[in-house]
Amino acid sequence: MKWKFMLTVATAAIVGLASHSQAGMAEAEKWINDEFQPSTLSADEQKAEMDWFIKAAEPFQGMEINVLSETIPTHEYESKVLTKAFEEITGIKVNHQLLGEGEVVQAVQTQMQTGRNLYDAYINDSDLIGTHSRLQLAVNLTDWMAGEGADVTLPTLDVDDFIGKSFTTGPDGKLYQLPDQQFANLYWFRYDWFQREDLQKQFKDLYGYDLGVPVNWSAYEDIAEFFTDHVKEIDGVRVYGHMDYGKRAPDLGWRMTDAWLSMAGAGSTGLPNGRPIDEWGIRMEEGSCNPAGASVTRGGGTNGPAAVYAIRKWDEWLRKYAPPGAADYDFYQSLPALAQGNVAQQIFWYTAFTATMVAPKSEGNNTVDDSGTPLWRMAPSPHGPYWVEGQKLGYQDAGSWTLFKSTPTDRAKAAWLYAQFTVSKTVSLKKSHVGLTIIRDSDIRHESFTERAPKLGGLVEFYRSPDRVLWSPTGVNVPDYPKLAQLWWQNIGDVNSGAFTPQEAMDRLAGEMDQVMARMQQADERANTYGGCGPRLNDEMAASDWLGKPNGPKAKLENEKPQGETIPYDELVARWKSN
Image 1 (tube, rainbow, N blue to C red):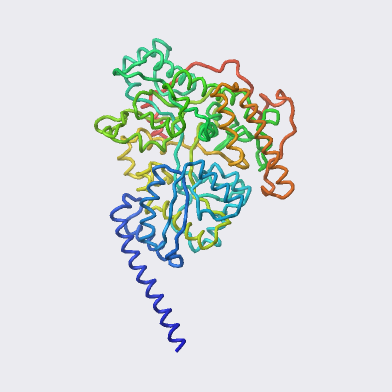
Image 2 (tube, helix red, strand yellow):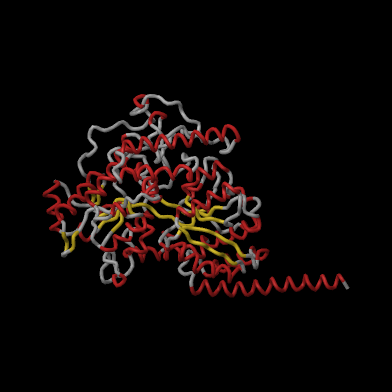
């Protein structure tokens, strides 16, 4: 009788799986029809992809997993909508928690340090690629997809379709993170004001060249001065030529590490990040995985002339050309402030806020017209006087799925299924339209974005342009992002407060970074903590031995304000379309 009982149980289990599979497919068809449109896949291809998820998830039905990401519209959509869809289709419940970016980094760091499984997966910035590839605490996804995770890896994932694939690849050529959303840091301006003939004439009379999209920082500064000190008022509203923030808080650090120094021209040529000197000023020789220092005296550029110039201009523009109180804003306060409609331009604007800036006028957005068409446009960031052709021109955030070896395998597999679900071709195009943080090349080229482009202020044109490769996240030169990133906001905050000059602050920052990297070097030499790829600091030499030398930090320019240069926005877009 025992064998009959066991056979009955086994038969019941098979029937249960079959019934769930049928129910799951019914739910999948409902979601495909009601929510997951448009898609780059046909309805039949979407059904086939969802059928794979249903079958791959069978061993994990009833499981409840926890994942963490920062709070932006894309992740809110995942947390509220995609978790529900995933559970109804696969039977796996997902608690997708949203926190501030700093808290996400702290949680990642805690899990790495303690080995405790706080979350089963994270969406954390690809800025940590240098950390993950060295510490080897994150799952190597290339090997995982071919080995232990092969049975839960989506056959139609198409990794090569991800725009940010190079951002999440370590020096060893392995993929450590899978992009979930990405957005660039671009130039934002009031297209309607720039098109006004009276303002165009006034600007040219004052500065001798045309009002347009600034190509260099000289033009940006002239435009900032023009609107703040000369125009002053438009349609009865006091206007300003610049927007930024300066509150002494962790997000001030991101404001600077998000490629501000490289926008000024600090660092070396090379894409996606400069070599040997990256956008943080950290030196790492070509072909090496060992950072050699941040200070100029070690061949780095963190306190070099270009970096100091960048910090000085940030502080100067914030004080002279931004609305009152901006110096006390943090990241979350400054960007929505543009919707008030009293700022002419912003040099450092994240496209993650596009969804907010295309909100209807009825919701208090004063930067769209009555039909919802933007009065503004986004364009490539202007570059500083130290910038040369071949350097990156700005920052691109790539929030990416990351698994840790400290997560039990069954939970990691279930989380990996959810991660792939959120970026699958069945889902990704609709998610891109919701959050406007495009990750797939096939999505941005879809006809639905062609139709929507006029209402998105240049986002579609930018992501279809060949120029998009000039924007990239923090690269592999940074050996331990959590340990080094926290040094930035404290030191640069002292510039805003007036306690330190830009040179003093950057000297101190570079020195502290070298001290932290020296401790990493000792740990790596003693216990192979960073897999042999920890820092190996250069001996200190006179700054003059490095400045202006081949592959060294750039020497101070005699003229840091060359002639301003602009380009008409429509001509810029036409150039993109011709490539």
